Image (cartoon, rainbow, N blue to C red; front, side):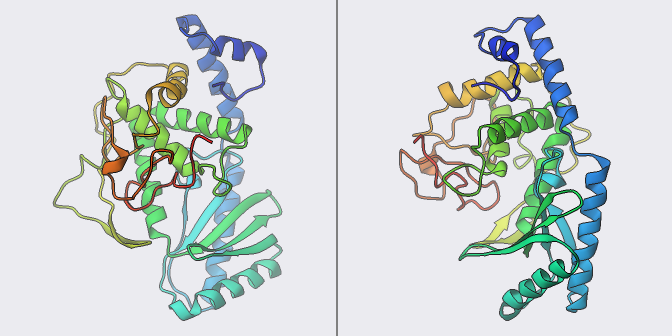
Amino acid sequence: ARPPGSSGSLGQMWSQAQMTAEASASLDARMADHLLRSQWRHEHDDAAYRILGDLKAILREQDHKGEVKIFGSCATSFRSAKSDLDVTYTGDVENGRVMSTLATVMQSLKDRGYQNVTKVFTSQTRLVKFTDPSTNMEVDFCLHNDLGIRNSKMLECYCRCDYRVQMLGRLVKLWAKRFDIVSSTDGCLNSYAYMLMVLYYLQSLQPEVIPNLQQMASAEDPCQIQGRDGWCETKFLEQVDELPRSENKSSVADLLYGFFRFYSEEFDWSQHAVCIREGRPGAIVDKFGLSTKTYYEQWYIEDPFDLKHNLAGKCSQQ
């Protein structure tokens, strides 16, 4: 596999089976520069807060008093200049008012000048998509995705464990976007699934780059949130700033090379699952021992909270 970037020399360096220290340092510098040029900036923060304010005002007009919150990539250090903004309303909306509430939100967004306002209503999804004309930021708005908020918080805690986490995650996202293999449709993995792959890989190394925050959580501090098919246990260690630094000293370039090698040569997709809930150094998780029925050809990436949700359920090697 080849990392993001158009430089031929970068590709040649990357193709070496064993990178020299000089090549690794050079790749690190180039990738850091690439990430700097594509990073989330202050103007994106300004746009996000303005959009949140508009959505909050629209919902207040309908007498909804709950909170409007960001989740997904933009709520973590995995965000970039091209990240979509995922927003959810956490207050109560009666089931009979969900469709009418979203319809009113759509009309109000159009009245405020937002563009490409559309709806996506399926058996599993109720959301409104629109574009902010001043920044071209694409926005997805939904109701009651408390689990998404919690997922995002855990991902951000993992980013805080080690600076290499967000760098590797962003590089993998850039690679997936460049080759058009990241999507919530068409049999591709979504961005969240790729980030779980990054975390599981970093947990599996010996020594590990990141610990297992779910296994480190206190048993006396449950945190149950309503998911798609019932209540989900979402506890994890949140006080990560005092954790000891990893003994793994691999460069970001080495980790990116190792990521592709791990999933293309070492990880057996017909038998194994990506499961950060059980991730640890040298761990192998049997996908047939998890909650969701699967088969050999199907990939398995477990949602760490909604254990019945296989994020790769529509993916296989083909």
